[in-house]
Image (cartoon, rainbow, N blue to C red):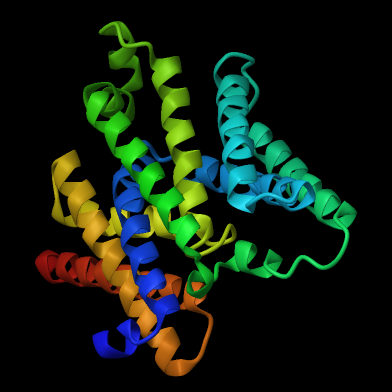
Length: 273
């Protein structure tokens, strides 16, 4: 596998993108699973399509358009649900639809053909340029730094938000900060698996890790390793079978998840006998 991968520059970039994305997936995915906010992650991811359209329209790297758009969506969804008491699924649904619509309009207004649009929807890890790798690397560093600085606060709001508030933690601020970190992770994952499948890579590795780890740091480490394994295994399979890389990565992760959960059901059934 390795000689084949390292023979081509685009494959080396793909491996680097997989490993960098795994760091953010493992850390932020753990919070998403523990706090059960996978639907919000999906809403932010799909709203990000508006940023891609804006990037194309302005003639800049689409990822630079996604960052402010995703951060705005994360803060707006959080404030609407926390302060304005708008139902969470209503706020998510509204931003989801509007973000996709804005993206379509901006892309339609852009002269010429948008050749990489499909890759941002469904991911194309084989086309990640060096500049995007550096951007993903610095976003990873930023996410790790913030999680390290506020690990206690994030743990408190993830496990028991009411108790955290009584203990003096500003739950609204840290909830919004967590949503912003999810938005930055979405930016990283857009290049690997695309907007449509972001939820899978944010939740599946962390969900499996939860079965084998009782601490948050342990869960993050295991989820990062699983994410790296799924990405590299999916990349290799897509290379061998000549099929879409992002979709293959998700299928590998999904099959592993089903096997782990089936194993648990079988073990419970045997114990009940």
